[in-house]
Image (cartoon, rainbow, N blue to C red; front, side, top):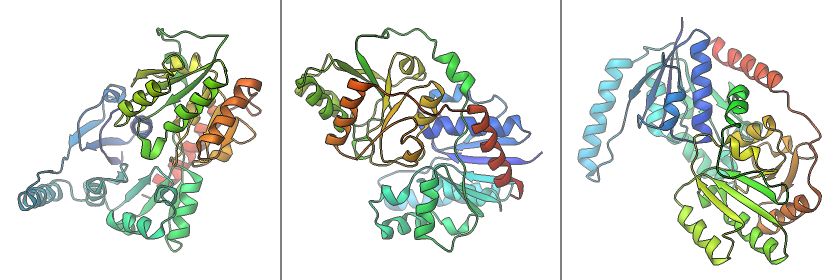
Length: 361
């Protein structure tokens, strides 16, 4: 049996973390001996991880005293090298943005894979120099393979690094059975036939998610006397800011904050439309969750939005006016999904891609 090391940050609630759980469990169920290396050995999703998967911690020192920090981290690196150098058949740096994740994966195996979760050109506002610096910083050229979870992420990477070989696109696995089962959990909020309910699930981070666009759009819709509500499932550094905006626009009856939920699926069930207002994403896990639960989507032009366009929802520009128009259109006319999602076929294709990526690693 082959051994696999996967380096990540933690197992808190998030799209990347959900995907990490599915990938790790899939590998273990298919005969791999899996070890997770986490910067923080914590997170409610840990209980969803197969019990046979080993978890170890590698946490860089973050002291404000530069010399002390460097000495401690140098010692940690030496210790990790001594203990784990080329110990694994395959290693994966799953937290692309962590230098420690890159270091761990490159040390642990000669067959190292960099797993990328964003369209980095969009993330860096089309600044190729910043994107080059980011990937240079994590030593992308030392990895045997690079995997992107979105088509546009791969395409834009190759625009900046056209000579890079062994670059793959492989979307995230999704557990439809678990989603169907968990969607039936009882919650306090109920389905309301009279009111259009929009749902946003994700981290409250204005830099990326731009939830202010949804709030401002809601303020316009309220002034125009439309009946609707928006449920925000999630939390983050800008939750307080968003709550203050809701108070400012007197939207307390229209926008509901339910906090971070380990099981968000009952909220899909009581909603009529899922909405994303982000500036950038990898391939959003909420796309897949919406497909499975048969919910139309309003989304900005994030990675692979073309999967939505004219098939499963409405595509908006990255501004308040466009999101407002999309919400108004949905309230007035609804949206009929034109292409059903075959989750069995989807996962079959992803598993085949994973076999190809891991085959010669």
